[in-house]
Length: 581
Image 1: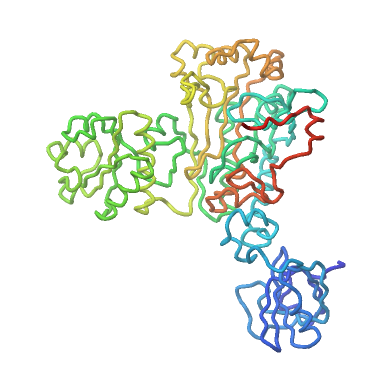
Image 2: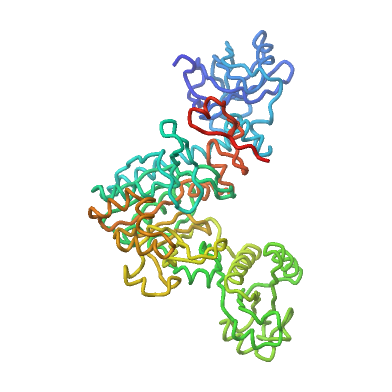
């Protein structure tokens, strides 16, 4: 090779005496006066260079760190080996140093090997420097390896990878579209796909049997720690002539080996737990339950309403912690933290001592009915009981879920170094929208209601759909559904949210038309690649596993996007900027 004979992670004791050339970034220098140690870094690792003679000594001193250089010299044994490094037993005595790309700026925005200590905006603005840090780069390499294995495993199960369009039409699928103005058609717009939802269903209508794609998705949403703004990627899957369990079987064969291989942690083996949506809310306080936490939520409303402690006279939930000594100081601190996290919620508590008698907290209000409480809670003695009570069921479920997480984490009850998967099933087809106050689709509008057309004889809020989520360690990895492939059922489903036949035809022309030509039953799912890698990398910030992410404010600081464009460009696409008053 022109620039190197070996990479910086390759040389070993067996290469001592060889004349070699390595190339990379000048990672660091230690100047001992008449002796200079330099470390060269590339994608593969690091190699030490040691120099004690002029003019080479002066030449190395003058080269700024992070410049790219090629060093030619002889491999020698280190006098003081570093056993932590693969190349820690050798070093290179240089004969020639060539500068390939000199750092011209006088200072770095942060030390490359300590970039994780810098502010996130600085890291993203100088992402090309941040990615030189091996600790940052390894997550991007991990991502590439995981995606390669996902592709292999899907192909081995008979799935065909098909790319779907990036420029498509806007459709109401739950989030804001990114829209793209058309030059050729004034006043009309393309949209970036929120997901390949309609295309993958059209592929099933076209006679393909098993489709997959590592699909880019675009949604104009606010950022969260586990959601990147702008774009994200998902393992998009669709299967013809398939039911819910067929989809489950595919992912249960794909996810555990990938999670276990790249983390070294234990991963659940199939079949994963199936938890109905309403059961999840009752027992875990969330539809994204972390099954590593052994605690469960119990309803004690009837019992609590009969005690004299008035704050429990609502819908009341209890969490029992058995055989754990919970100090009073910790309880008081947790009560304060719970109030902050729930914006004013209250946690009540009492203990059952070694004799089974209530003690502490609200013990005096439950003492007369202690036996009933113990029976309802399934415990006799040595237990800590935390309680939450609210007027509204949804609020108490949510707050009990927060408390369950706090207790599991704070009392060190949550399993470590494991991946616990579950399917959340039987989602309601409809819900009342928080903002609109009107009936809306709860999940995916293209889902099949359980019972088909007969389901619409029920109260809409009682209709269940063949919809499901897969959850791992409290993180929702994906949503999926058995699709509605019957035009009559599709029209009926949309009519309940106020869309008539003409509107459905106008909003989903290709899909509706394809169904009229005979569509197979089909089902699919789409786990998020970014979230999978985030979990496997054991990081809580999804931006750490994306090569060039936007920041939390949806700005690309590296490319300075979004940014203004020239008036000529706006004129070409028939756009005029409306000035804010």
